[in-house]
Length: 374
Image (cartoon, rainbow, N blue to C red; front, top):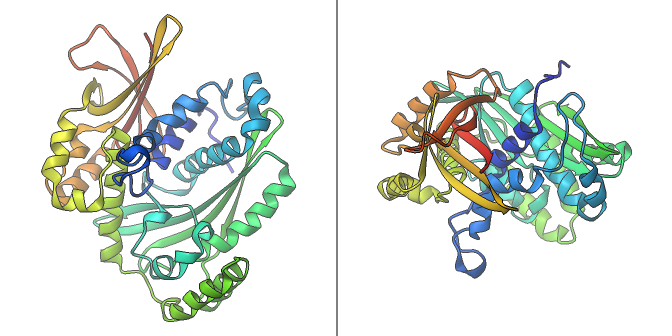
């Protein structure tokens, strides 16, 4: 497979932040009663802030820094899992989808008859993410992705990939869409980050039932899980409704964009109170760039005598929730400016502060990242 040679660690971390912002339920109360544990809103920023120090070179030889080697044995689980998501995001957006797509966390789906019904007690056995491409209001591509990570060795990665094959077989087929099921394993090996991917053919209903039963038997609460599987046996050969799924995907991804800009919102809020959300958008910092205006959340971190500023945001035009049709059309037009998966750096500045030049990295889904030291 051709490997793009000019990707930067910053791009991997940008992708990690964008994907982990697909977390469902960011509007619900968390610790200390803060909405979504306000720290989880920073899913869009923590990836960049937490791992900015971890790399020191470009692909195809992306090496981990010496500092990473010193802390990896105490933080290896987090490192490998998070880098796995970063690599998976890059792989799907660079090499699998033919056009820039949308991403949804599998924990949030309610449109899949098996995931919504059978998987309640299987919890972590669900796949991780769905990437979608749409055309003329219809789903044209669906990519089911399970991400694995470890800091052991290639043998451990192979074992994890085998487990992931079961997980990507669970979701139902989507009529009229090209559906791909991908398992991605990342391994921290020495000072390098290695990744492996396996594509699984679409299963029939019998195969999916066997997989679900096998997964249920692995659980401590197997009797409860197996009872659920019996209850949803009728769903195993049910196809997902294109119309329902397309609308749900649009709103779930819109919630991700809002979270990335710093406004955690529920699906109900997006559908019923768009005016309130747009008011909140208007309070966000504006960054003007050659690619248009962005509304963003800014994090300032003191670094000695200077400050590190991390800004994550979304194109202002894509945060207009006046109607689903208008929003969808704007997003189609915006991503038409990009080739699939390409990050485009452009000059910019905080609105009204032309004397503070920024380098802003933008992506086809409308997201932006700027990291500066002042």
